[in-house]
Amino acid sequence: MSDLSGKVAIVTGGGGGIGAASASAMASRGAAVVVADVNLAAAERSADVIRANGGEALAVAADVSQRTQVEALVDAALERFGRLDILFNNAGIQYDKSMEDTSEEEWDRLFAINVKGMFLCSKAVIPALERQGGGVILNCASVASFRPLMGMNTAYVASKGAVMAMTRDMAVALAPRNIRVLALCPGPTRTPITADSIARGVITEEEVRALQLTDRIAEPAEIGEIAAYLVSPAARYFVGTGVVADGGMCIT
Image 1 (cartoon, rainbow, N blue to C red):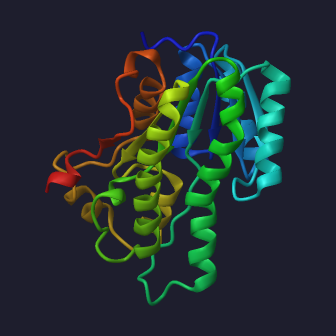
Image 2: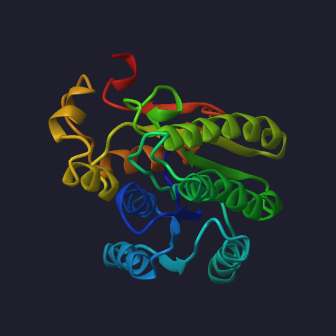
């Protein structure tokens, strides 16, 4: 029962990487998808892929750290499709920096997107989900919610720990209103962020692969399939937890 026919999903950070792959995977299961990204051109490209494969998609520009833009995103989704069933809080950024090299401005910007953005988006969709009797909020956490990342991403690790804590509390608060909340916690995935870190020499691909029992980096499509499953009725017993998809990284 991973069918999403008749459902409407918002995917933030949907212009590339895990967000784009998840939007496509949800659309392939029948959902109409609102692809939100701070980069409208990237969102349009993702929406075009969905439409080319016979799905329904709407691209919307939105900076999730800005309340007015988030509210406009939800309004656009409701105006176009008339309902909301799913929110995938995927938008996020990362700085490959130690604590002492991270500026206060970088720390604030990272938390504004990775944590405040999820708060704003979730708050904005709750009334729409509640009006139709419930829905699903999936937060993109990380293996960094549970373990350090070689000591070079303190701000990012802190933000993803906050996401996991927020997910648990949201699940308790919203379960009585039939809104299921959970988190997806990917390991290293071949996204633009990972590619940039490797290209800049922050870490080598071999070092990334060595962190995992599978000795490889996940493809976005793999993680997207998991996201689409987790927001489906087939996964309705997953509540308040962080589903780890990391090739064994957390147990090494």
